[in-house]
Length: 425
Image (cartoon, rainbow, N blue to C red; front, side, top):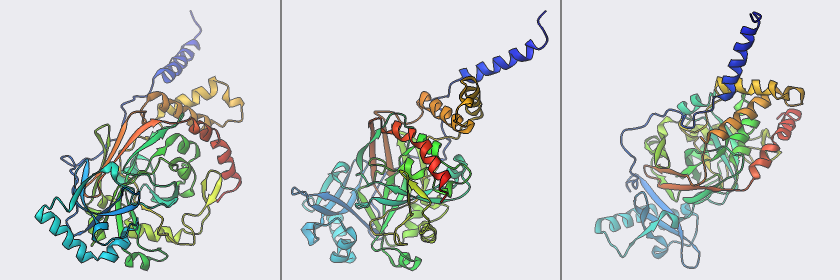
């Protein structure tokens, strides 16, 4: 007869084998609360505001458009350079120069008469980004209640996002080792610098659809799980040349709060609905976000590529900066399951990693990332992400194969974390 202690030992070995052998479900997703019926984009009624866009003429000059109709694939618009507008990408100046009343009259004349000689059709691929050419923007984290719950965040926070905006039909590069995730958001720009909340109240506000891509492998390695507001990891994980797709329509509403509250935004992954929300579901509206940013304008705790940054420069939201709303529920990322954490601990012991300088926490995180890479749950080459809104148009982003930069970035995550530990912000 075998000694009695063999039985619990055998049970432990079986448990270890089970923990190591069970893979992650590639179809596991965050639940979402979706509205009934598909979202059909349209143009905001002219009595509620103006919708403008940018294209380029045959000489490559920026050409402002007054949008009169929107569908999933294209817009109908009036070339405003034929009605006195300068060839400029500053759409606020176009409204000032031509006049809001004249633009409304032009809209009504074109739509009521259905004048084909005035209105031209443009595919979204012919439109430019309306976000401007700024390189640093203000992003908002967990500003929708359900998204805060699915990521286990306790509060709304901000961080700088680096990189120039890309147009409404674009690509995002999936680099080796990356866990690429999507987010749909509402973005706003202003007709002036915002140094005080009074500036916000006085400013003309333009709203547009935008997206925010994230490398969750980088974020998982760098994030301070006890304090998202520490500025750790978010800028590195969410910045880059492909990570900020933006819409081609700028909506300047008469009542910005009513517009944002009513606006519906959705994400489609290969045609399947994955995010669906209204702006009214934001925890902090854009005025409150602005106040929060201005009150946090001097801290240099925000790390990006090993360098410390402020959320905004000169204690103001500049005209070239975008203020982002945050995203609703339905992202790909889900916190590690108990099985993933247990698997990481078992691997930490069985592989002898506990004898190295790698901490148990770091090894469990690395194990979690490898499990997620193996599962294939995150975005893959040839997938298509489509962001759609009620009246801000459509963004279409195709996932393409990138280089191996993410491997190098992930490899440097440990050294970046050491920097943050040695120099707390």
